[in-house]
Image 1 (cartoon, one colour):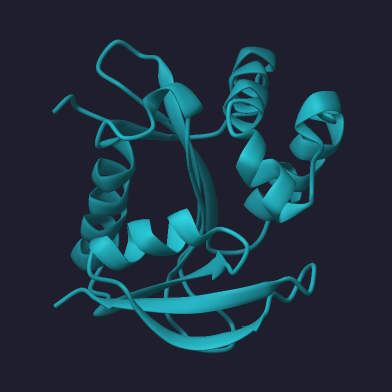
Image 2: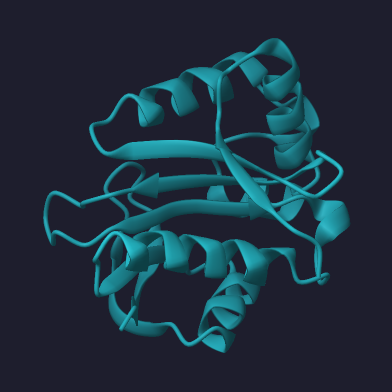
Length: 166
């Protein structure tokens, strides 16, 4: 497996072009999430949304790069959710050309280790009910369903998942 590095998104023009490419390479996710049309991707809106997300206290938006420096993923992490106190993965998006190559598992493992090393004993995320492949992915990595509820921002039906980090 290749080495993956996580770096904070700096919102430079080249990085945002890479982010747009990541989203466009995942049209099924874009359609399921309903936020962005992959055929007419709103780069300015995506940047504004990510800037807003990164501005939240304890939040990080990160680009994942392979050993050659190519962007292979986008992550949004929250150190402490205001309602349950757990860290959360808000987004883990792997470039479409990298699907089924172990990148998603490597990213999940890196995030788990990141929070484990900070003393957290569990991690949470929400999977859109309209993305069964995502549910299968997280379940295969040992995550378990703990609740079903709409997401706060858009009201989409979600499956809340938890993974112990101990």
